[in-house]
Length: 315
Image 1 (cartoon, rainbow, N blue to C red):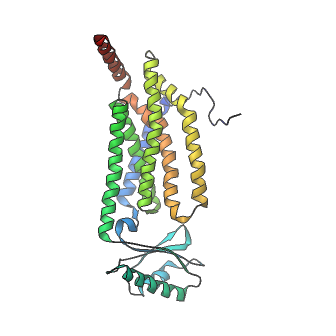
Image 2 (spheres, rainbow, N blue to C red):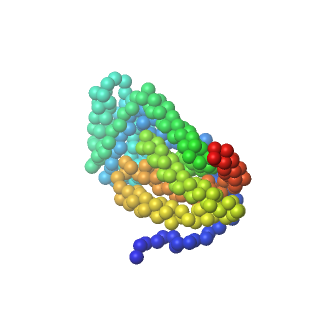
Image 3 (cartoon, rainbow, N blue to C red):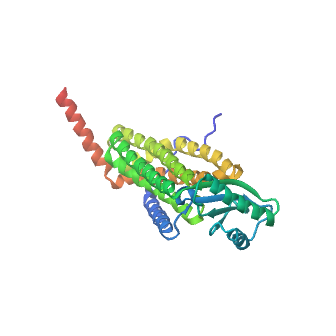
């Protein structure tokens, strides 16, 4: 017997909850935008440039004492951050002038100083990015996210109608802003891995919304006398088993990576988990119900009549 997370022929009134969903969506979006403005993102070395060392200690070191020890080496002012647990510390330093050999000399000095004062210390990874490269990465990341949103709008516009594109983009903006607000709140490191996660979230959420939009368009033609609220509820309920099964399957794999995977992919996995939850919510409660406010029923009927008259003239 196949596993069914959602029974067949559900009849949940999602449209009745649309004003609550719209209010929650607006609250989350404004709150996330406020966090981004006030706290900002904890940009990784990919975006700010410099030298980053991930150091693992046998016991949790006092951060003030550790910062003083690193600064005493004479390689610049350090910034420290716990990474995953209190025994793993990210040490950020200004990028030394010169070639890769200069970077290795700085790392060797810090390693020597810490191995002298802390037994069992290990350097898990070392990364260095110049300021010029980091600026290019910031611009490339912004272009990637911006162009993806633009092409999403164009795709849904030409695939369906413009009002489907508007509702989809509004929901995707909510998904992206809330995800980035989460990183502003937690101050998890925001690097190129997270940009990749954001783009993946856009793709996943778009796929989810297109499935529902396609069913709404089919039902608009099939049930021309039905109220638009009934059509949206019917369409969302018909696609609900597929939506829930897809989300739960992905979450099961991502949660395993989140709790059992290496620290280096923790931020990426956390972004994906949040993005799938938020994206599924916006697909069910936001983008579909927003079509009511955009007047999809009369616009769709007018478009259908126009197509019918055009077919008659051709005939």
